[in-house]
Image 1 (cartoon, one colour):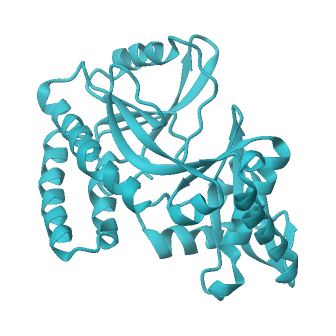
Image 2 (cartoon, helix red, strand yellow; image 1 turned 180 degrees about the vertical axis):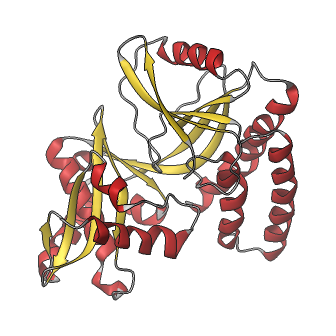
Length: 318
């Protein structure tokens, strides 16, 4: 991730991290709208079963990529960007979003001002769908779903694992990399050991015979918990169920603390069976102060993704 990181004080009481970029088209998707909507989307085309539709979408992405560069879509200020896949917000009062926009518009008059990880559209902004995430309140799930993840929680002991606090940032990064970079995409955030060690996260891991084989790092804000640091040894047998056990551990933590889980994106069928509800996550872009050329890509993205891609997300459970 290559970016300029700053902090924004809203109304003298709420602090939000802000990242500023001018281009960097090869950047991780958390700092680059181009990577998110063009590069990463191209990698995800394998999810489309129809070869004809896949070819059409690939061609459309080529045109969209040209438009995004023409509009300089990566000249952007990203608000509440913690350099993570899922960014939770503190509780904000009415009028604070508008105050943040006004302050940033003065400071960065030639940048799009974009709010990350928004679950409800923001009036006055171009609300571009980003991902389908899953929300679950483990303590309130229906009996069948709750029994499922409680059963998977018991697998931890049955498979010979114990829950520990990992003390080696290098191992945490290795397991995250195996899942998010090696299995999924190099366009995901690539964490350093120092970054992982200094995050204000709580870490838990599954260890067998003294060796950590799965890890999660979570944080909570305003009644919601999420785990952007999540990984396991993908070389171990799938039947062992490391992903299922790690997810069940997160649900147990949330239930004990009375929290809702933002379970991020992916594995939709798995999460639905455990009581999660889908929710579209947006990037809300304020671009009213920009010329038409700079607004064009955001407007087109909102229209195309809302009209065509969101229905596919909901239908296929992406």
